[in-house]
Image 1 (cartoon, rainbow over the protein chains, first blue to last red):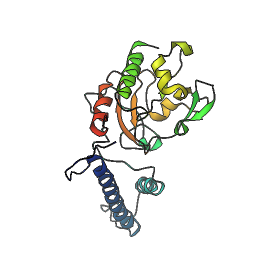
Image 2 (image 1 turned 30 degrees about the horizontal axis):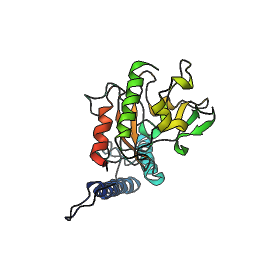
Image 3 (image 1 turned 180 degrees about the vertical axis):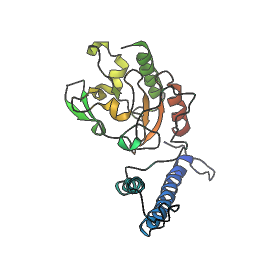
Image 4 (image 1 turned 90 degrees about the vertical axis):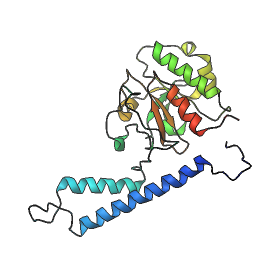
Length: 128
Length: 107
């Protein structure tokens, strides 16, 4: 749907593809560094001198990793095609964790079961 | 249908019709708290989204999953890759128009 230009101009929408991939790759690299430190024992409660992880820390890092592995945890940064909620505009923010399905700009839409009004059949949103 | 959601819906249909036909798909979810008839739905909505008007399924509550209050509702723009582009309250559909103007072209 982009108009053809006579000059050599860059399509800003096509640019977003690159921006989103590079940003996601950076997030993954940063995560990998954290993850490998975790298993080499460098993360932990340094004050007590004990190298180890709390259960919560492990869970948090592990679920972040699962987000990457499954592809479901990707979060695209604000751009022309991802507009975050601005406080002044929105009186109510969606409640809950985006991983569980809460709507959040830059995150994928979770599939839900719905009942189609036209024929009262049970449908999945992603099908329609 | 109550005032705010009806006007938000009609604003959405207006916005959709400013762009080439078929570019933007409309899907409507209504919690169906009060019974309404097929004839109550504005005809422009039926033209754009006849088979994409939904109510809640017995097995799961879409509003709960998405974190939206049934009293508030939301307009959600979903990109072709299934990711959320932007969210707008029902009272501010112009947010959606601004979003589309930033990334779509009216040919």
